[in-house]
Amino acid sequence: MTPRTALVTGASTGIGFETAIALKAAGFTVYAGARRVEKMEPLKDHGITVLSLDVTLEDSMASAVALVEAAHGRIDVLVNNAGYGSYGSLEEVPLAEGRRQFEVNVIGLARMTQLVIPAMRQARSGRIINISSIGGKMYEPLGAWYHGTKFAVEGMSDSLRLELKPHGIDVVIVEPAGTDTEWGTIAGQGLLATSADGPYREQAHVMAAALASTSGQVISTPASVVAKAIVRAATAKRPRTRYPVGRGAWSVLALRRVLPDRLFDVALWSSYKRFTG
Image (cartoon, rainbow, N blue to C red; front, side, top):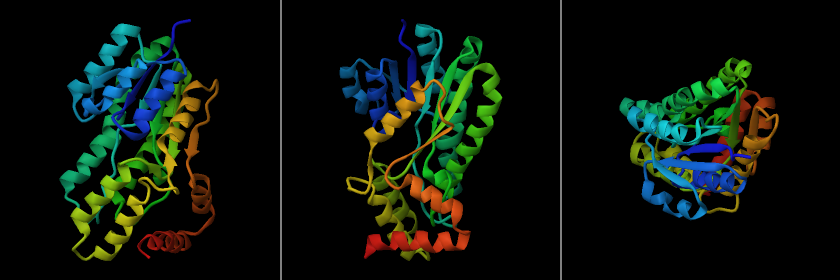
């Protein structure tokens, strides 16, 4: 039986890197794409093909999909993992940065999806796995741009699930909680660069500490655990529509459902302030 083909975006580190390895171990032919191709060199030792892929550039996205489809006819599983977190007060984050946040986290995801749908639709088979976050169901101070993108991914994925169902294509959302990757550290550094010295400085230092706490800490979830959930989503005969994953993911989502907004505001801020003592 011919192995199914998977393309993983944002595969240079963290969740994407581990997902590429896990999908290969599960029997997929795997293509891993990212801007930092040198970071993906170790993936070659696992028999994974690495591609230069920038989800903000049309030619880069179209070339990557065309290469895989030329070799295999279609992409069976697309994992839309490329993304980053842009934090800072809405007042202080330049609009150009806000646009870039949506360009990477939403528009790039949408364009990659557009590119793979025609071959999937023709085969009446395929699976699109969008990496959202529990941040697509909750919110944080100084995270308006980031959470705006994840809320968008959630709504887009739900709509897409319905419109592609008649064509045999599944759409799945994976919602990680805090994951032990470089993501939190980088997001915290960006936050401090934007808002550490202005009118939002108290919140900025609290939030930067909370974001950094996901990197190398026992409270965070290893990226490999998220990768296992993605493999389950890719291989299940009838996948769930959502896979919350990670320490605290289910409890946070449950609290968001049951607590009134203002009470959730208090609980959230209190939980974050403990990171600064």
